[in-house]
Amino acid sequence: MAQKPSIPKGTRDFSPVEMARRNYIFDTIREAFRLFGYRQIETPAMENLSTLMGKYGEEGDKLLFKILNSGDFMKDVNPSDLEDHNLPRLTNQLCEKGLRYDLTVPFARFVVQHRNEIQMPFKRFQIQPVWRADRPQKGRYREFYQCDADVVGSDSLANEIELLSLIDHVMGKLGIRTCIHVNNRKILTGIAETIGEADKIVDITVAIDKIDKIGIDNVNAELREKGLSEQAIEALRPLLELSGSNDEKLEKLSVLLAGSEIGMKGFEEMREVLDGFENLGHSCGVELDVSLARGLNYYTGTIIEVKALDVEIGSITGGGRYDNLTGVFGVSGLSGVGISFGADRIYDVLNTLDLYPKEITGSVKALFINFGKQEAAAAMRCIKNLRDAGISAQLYPDCTKMKKQMQFANSEGVQYVVLIGDSELADGTATVKNMTDGSQVTVPQDRISEVLC
Image (cartoon, rainbow, N blue to C red; front, side, top):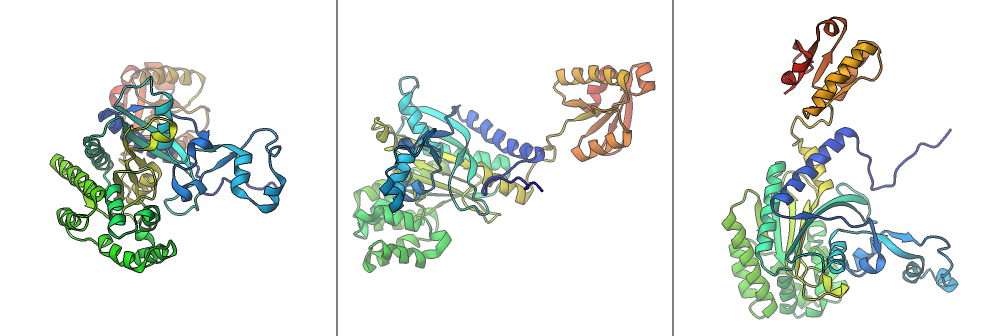
């Protein structure tokens, strides 16, 4: 007996109904991107590893899917590296390309490669899949879609404020109650300076980024392993446990960071962003979260993470400012800021809360019953007219029992069934049956669209 086929863990198939729901999400986000003035680009699924490596920190590099070189990929491998299981060196010898980990680094490469063709500031959006060699679990997949919006070539904090407004707009359209968590990388750097551990900023941010998952005690244990002193760990605790309103947190931060120039710069930026967003008005919550780090080394300013309030799941949107990212590709001083909507997690949230509009089914609006060759020909002419009018319709392809055709319409969620039998064919009419309430009406064939609209 043949083995049943399967797909890799962390990946999924999507049925027509599921795709209709996913397209509702993509279309909502795409419409918002265009409304806010972003223009669409696409980049290849695979990039050179030289483009990807070193951009996501040590932990991110481990999650890159690497692609074996074509042909005799073993020809340049050093036998001693095989015997010693020297994975880093083997990877360099076996692989030159990898699947993209996110859309931001490929975008930075795109900007540098095409810098003479684009006008600054450049606002782009991108909706494509990405891949991560992560451990699959609820809300975390190895293949998933990101929906990114970025602005490069502008230092203005108005960009951050607009991105927060964009998040609020999209979540409002989708009906998801959310809280936007914000922080600033300069605040984190200032905290590291304040506790006397400026050289441990990466270790600190990687550790505290896990605080919601493992708790502050385990974070402290990890910091000890990284060499932070007990005095520094104790000095860090009150900064991570700030409470109160955003204004109250800012007031406390202004005192705690008073001795750090970069920390105060982050404080001023954070206050401007929060004040600007409040001035616009918004329906979602927004919270200054000093423990928010996002663990990615390329963030240099504002950090953003969005969480759904009614579903236990990870962040559904995230992003931030990355002033130095294009510098590694030869273009320095080009500032950027962006966000990424996690379409797959948003999909899980909408499924859990059943927030889809009722009309999203993906099925045609009208199914014509097939009574035979002549009747089918008449039905096809009507179907063409409906399609020309923008109304989806189809003919059941086989002349079979009417019961079977009606069952098909029910299973597919078709709203209307149209019958053109002997009598209708003779007098040029059609009988239109509403599958929701069971009512039906007979109309001239050229007026079917009036019933369906």
